[in-house]
Image 1: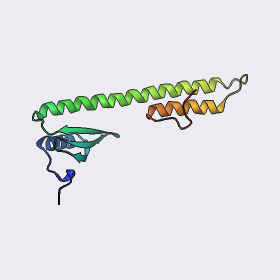
Image 2 (image 1 turned 90 degrees about the vertical axis):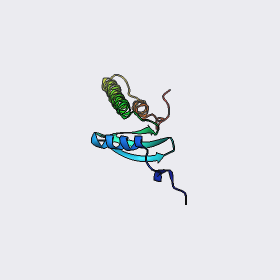
Image 3 (image 1 turned 30 degrees about the vertical axis):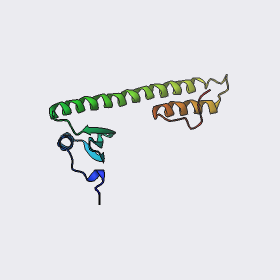
Length: 133
């Protein structure tokens, strides 16, 4: 019976990466193993992403440095996206509160649709209520 790709022996690069991640507090789970690379889910401090380890890498110090740079940029991007979301939600809240002046009617459907769009943009999916006109 043929081995599945997860049963193949880990390359030296994959073994090194797994040791590095463990030593630095990451949780790593192998998703798939191919002849050319291993694909992992990497988690730390509530942040998770997929990462590929190319099997032909021999300069492990450079591989570690590249991973550190990647993880730094990845986590900074998440933080910036959270800040943008908070800014948009604050602006939305201010708009809703400003509409409570007693002089103009409030289109509650539009208010809900606006926040639906903000949240959908953050999670990279279509709004539940459809696009904003």
